[in-house]
Image (cartoon, rainbow, N blue to C red; front, side, top):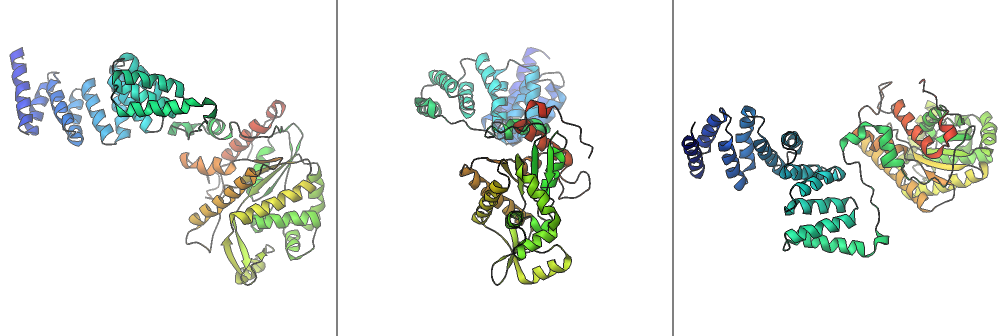
Length: 481
């Protein structure tokens, strides 16, 4: 086609667009695409962009890119339309293709930065904005975007420098002036700047669980200077999860003991009764039940082990427990079916308060100070879900309330800054990280209650990374479970 023919077709497309005949313009543009000419398609894109008709732009231009898939400007137009209509997952592949074909295109890099920043991946966005500014130093928008992303990540000084450059390009812009004012206030007292720890920005961060634990959970975790060394005595107790932790710790050169407790001892009320039995022996109905459930002949063995224990790991299971319907007294069955049936007839099953659990934890810690005077005490919340409830219409909702109560109680203990008391985030590692990773429960037995054994090993490997010395770390053996 000669030049006059090109002008004639483009003129017809423009005329059709002015008359609202989008279908005619589309047909003409497609005809030109067959010969590799995308100018008609870009005319349509510009017309629809001007009217912010983003949905129509996608509908019309997407088939055009199938005919001419290597045309970066058309791909960019669709990417912009997908971004404006919040179809972010569909937008990214188009932008990646644009940058592959035009790596030095400022608009493409700027939009990619905006896309990943919108997804909360601020660190990933900064290089795109920085490159857009370098490619187009006279463009205002990339500079403002870079300033905002830098301030989001705590790079306030550089953010102010970039914001001032943006102001020089567009001094009357209210957004940049407000940003400059905010940054100057922050930098007036740099010693008062608080560091913000961010949620993992990318879903890909959850692909490597051990690395995620290190970077986002246990990094800078308070340890009070405690170090586990080879041969040290560790005692785990509390819910059934304590036994899983003990088995995982046995992969290292440690002397690990666990007090195996049944479902009767999965609340802090029951754990308090266990501690009372260890301290005073059988002296009332509760301590008698504990002795029968755990084994009266094991008390002396446990007490003797505790005397030399250097670390005591206590896992909290449930905030719900049985209480006498008439007196409100905490009740615990003896473990047999008859006892449990009798308990149900005279009790109310309810979730206890945060303060109830704080009081119980303080009592447990106090007894441990007597029984295990050398021990650093590690509190952790079991990630194992509750099995059933009669209090709520859903065990899932009940479990959320129960675990939340225990976690807040543990936090209240930490706020008191009791010497030698540390929190370990087992619950967060499985239940919060687990929401972003597959197969956290039931991979080896199909149970929705049993955490993946590999996940438990990851938790305890992180534990040793934080608390163990180098010689202990070197003793790890491969799990045979």
